[in-house]
Image: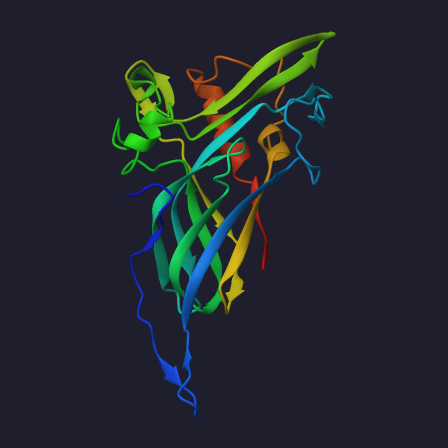
Length: 246
């Protein structure tokens, strides 16, 4: 798999249609995938405590990185176009957009992807670019790679405390691990020309729906906390939505 270079594996046949003046009409084009972030519709400002969770705890966001893999476009005839590769989205960097070339123009019924890596891809040390990004998940916790790093500070009792919402493989007991990735299904869209599809992450959903996240209970040292890891998995399934295509 190649980092940030999405290669369409199937259905890359280009049908050439000619008009009366022999103009070649394109039947495929580049689909850009843009990731946007908010807190219940509010703009995120780094290092400012401008977010409030269900417990009234004010928190800031100082880091947000997460891994997306196995993007698939779904067609009306129940076939699909898988897109190879993975994306490490970093809100502190410029890599919030990726590009998939030669996507056939069509009315797609949906898009899906994996948050993190599944068991076939989550291989210890397999991706040099992720290794250099310090994205590895400790071997004693199941190995492979992080799925997300969300960090910041929150106020409690008039004091400021750190939190580190890190997600990856869940260690149930020493030597016993559970897969912790999840699949996301988004709405359909009409792709008739080279366009950008916007995928929105509502960061607030990581802290609620269905579990209201009390930062005084789960703030740091969560990587080795089995219950915290499983709650992240449950809450994450409502985080993403399709915004618009333009």
